[in-house]
Length: 129
Image (cartoon, rainbow, N blue to C red; front, top):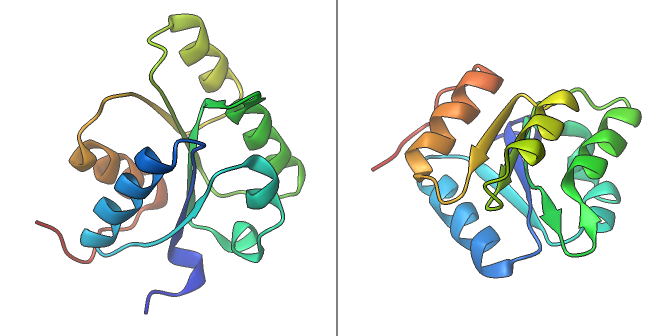
């Protein structure tokens, strides 16, 4: 089993999208924890030791950018990758200005996400298709 520090935390309120991302990353050898709300993520033990966060920008009535700021305020230094299907440049810019390590527009290829995770964590996936 990969140590908790190598856990990728996904926060997405769309369970189908989150589950698909989780399953795809597992194929590449990552240990993944999925949360459907900011509160669940913030209250989880794994949040404090995650290697990286993949956070959707729109989490129902909540903001993924606000969640990344809350994570940072807790002193957690793991990089954040924001994802969004909005296609709006101002959303991308706000995410980047908030300090996220990367931003991906949905839809994206899982291999692109893996490449970005490897870049921001300095870790190569264990396996993959």
